[in-house]
Image (cartoon, rainbow, N blue to C red; front, side):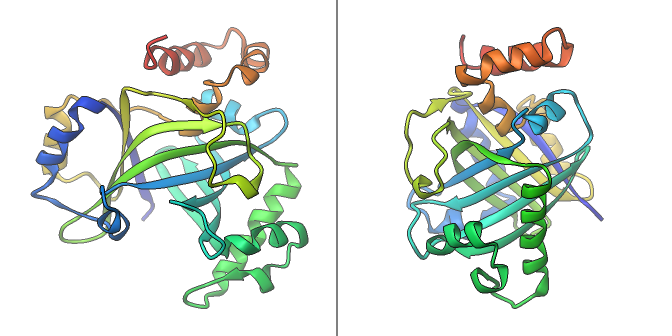
Length: 266
């Protein structure tokens, strides 16, 4: 059974109340539980083709698509685990493939492609090396380049009785076009997106439980096709002319452009 992902937008002012409603049913995941303010920072560099094909597939509503990224968490240090990730979507169904490398070895891995030497696995499974090999295959096949660095704080929960339901609240979404991989820990010339809202992501195997459907109804949360990557790309004027020229007149773009700008108060 595939994992299903649902996304909602909620005003930041309502997050504290939402947290009270969720509290009887969920527990913090171990990363949020270890953080002093229950939030950890997610830092990702997203790759795309020179023509931004991944972006265009998103706003065109293509059901089957993928994202390629390098992700790390909190303050990046030499011994920080850094992940090569491929996230594939087929409608609401998602699958994520990842492999880990120490941050201090990331550059040599990207330079040499020596997966056996630099990719590590906590459980020694061959799948980690297969995932890394597929990551490099996609990079070279599609001529992918690092396009944007996306950063946000995440508050994450699991259902109290099993881990097949995960709820995250992502805050302070921001991005930078400064994408050298040796500056993952820096926030240079960041642009904030959805500054007055947070993104709720619900990942579940199967259907949403009744208690969660009731909370969603109480807060009048509307299911939305929210992409942090696409939202952040449209926030940067450097991309604006290219986007307008490439997809001018498309109804999907007009609706997406309205969402990404009106929510910022533009």
